[in-house]
Image 1 (cartoon, protein in one colour):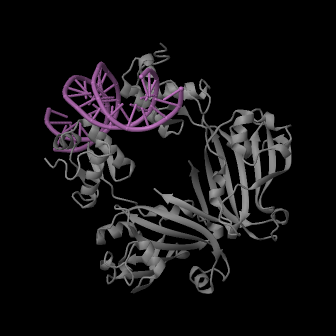
Image 2 (tube, chains in turn purple, orange, yellow, brown):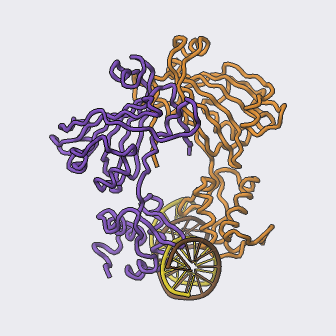
Image 3 (cartoon, rainbow over the protein chains, first blue to last red):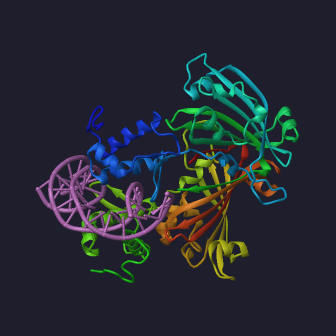
Length: 245
Length: 245
DNA sequence: CAGTGGTCTAGACCACCGC
DNA sequence: CGGTGGTCTAGACCACTGG
């Protein structure tokens, strides 16, 4: 069928080439996130390879978290990160044990030119526009996290004018629903600092209070950085668990 | 050869059973860390299965980081964590960019009974003995990390009397060389706090200075917790990068 | 029940390593 | 060159899912 689109085999293995071919079809949106791709037997036939070879290619994409296998049902394009992943960094020692999703309130939204660092991180040309957001997250009406977000503008245009009061508490599912952007993975950089007076006021803490800063870069399926986020929280409410290897 | 030692196949897949069999042979020390296990063809023949099946079993153990494949050379038992893994949490902003391994000095060593929490974490019976260590790590004679370690005593007996001044800067390779203990993985819990007066004196910082605490549990190949470690460092020198998913 | 992914086989050939 | 792991095949059968 759609055999060798460019090079059937070069220095690469056949399953590597197949994985690249399928990756490209996924990224160009041939199947929407959450949808099943054709069964292995069909793929094997259409590419003219053995079942085991197609399975090896699919395994690659599964290990990249682009696909998910479900025994007896099919192989599905990933739906990306849930959105509650930030919360695993913070533990709030107040009262109940249950780790609920905090409420979210947008404090401000501005469209402006990207700074040099921002344009660089987001892979934008000089002079590109972005949406800049300030966001306060609370649990039981008690502020706990103060966030600054930067989103590239052609891509997130739909968020530039919609009513921020109606936004979801979890942004990532909303990115997908409203803008078609799937957050695939992210990289967080943790550091320690002290609150400015303004930050302290918003978090109901004193100026100079110790805080944790989580600087996040979030990436879409294609590996492009599509969100910059900086989150501040009380250092004494912070707890994080990591696996080493 | 050494076919079904117990149950050739139950609710498990054949490669799952083979993996368990090989895992057990590795854990009981049939091959020392760094040594090659028999080639796939030999294993397949001796277990009376196809090559692909043994390969699937080995892949399981590779994904558990018990084995490493080296193309053209063989399949090797892992040598465990290097030991510099703690340093990825801390960045020292002083002078040079190079991330060197800090010097290490043992401040104290005591053998005592394990506390309740310690015995629980280490899987020891009540009333068991441990080695308790205090350790100061420095870069260019400047103290940067203050550590407390707890090691279970039958296992680390060789460290109870040897000259601490002669110990390596990296403990994990020494554990393996001296005690035959391989550190396979670890779990770190990060939190923030303030230095006590004593801690501050050792780190040449003020009492109450903001600090990061990394509480580590380290595990051997068999998955037993064999080291408890608590590391304190200046919060302002702390920086950590994590992949989300 | 039909359709899907998961397991297993027996064998061929390739790619890398070190002597 | 021989020995190792890596790729690929063609096909059989098993296990899970859902109508």
